Image 1 (cartoon, helix red, strand yellow):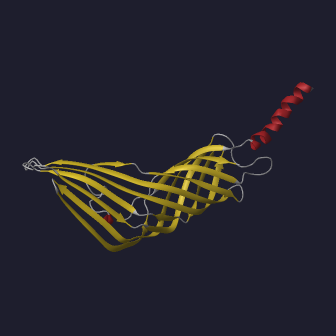
Image 2 (cartoon, helix red, strand yellow; image 1 turned 90 degrees about the horizontal axis):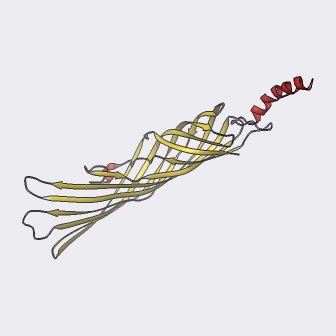
Image 3 (cartoon, rainbow, N blue to C red; image 1 turned 180 degrees about the horizontal axis):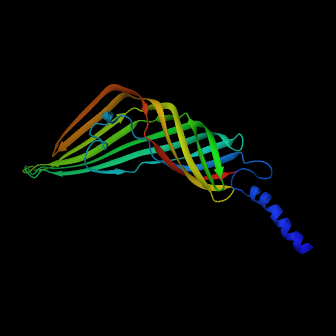
Amino acid sequence: MKRIFLPLFILSSFPAFAQMNCPTFTRYGGFDRWEISPLVSTVDPYPFDEFVLSSAYLSAGDLRDHSLAAGVIVKFFLDENIAVRLKLIFANRSLQNLVSIIDTSSGNTHSDNEKVTQTLFKIAPGFQWTFFENHISFYGGFEAPFTLQNDLTQVGSGIDLAPGDTAPTFHSFHRTVPGGYSAGIGIFGGSTYYFTHFFGAGFELSAAYQYTSIGGLITSSDASASGSSTAIAISSYVETQERFGFTPVQALIFVTFRF
């Protein structure tokens, strides 16, 4: 009798056991409220290339992108499928452009090393709907991103040498474009694979329609030196740019912890 009863007990207990250990929410009659997801992300493109004259965005050369963005998404679930969330991302825009030109007709040579740097901070509160299927979740929703853009700095140095010159001509410049902000309404969607009830990994795509304002007092200094002579030019002017429009689709990957 015991041999018959034991298998029946195991089979009848299996649904409850699977439900408690399901990597979705249900656990001992409740569900997990919090989910925290550290992430790495693509960097928002600079919205106004016309501000960056002869920059790494516009010049031909060996462009090297060292930009990096990282952050976290914090979610609080109101029930098993609906959550409010907050996305925080810090980004460091860092571009380097190396140019080396030899004019075969004149024999002139030119080399240039230019860097563009800027930091950004994005905060995006949002609302999320989630669908769970075994170990996988699919989700989407709306968010209101606000991005604070710090000053953009453009620095460079170069060398020009022409046949017959007794010494090369050295050039350097430094340019600062004041930052600004972007604000708008966006959508997002993504998926997560849960390896366990508490831990998973996934990706997310997002885009937004937003207003962007950048600019102010733009300052620049240029210097050139050849032999014992040196020339320095300093200039400044005021210009701002404003724009409404859709952002390119941004992507991020993350790991996630639920509790």
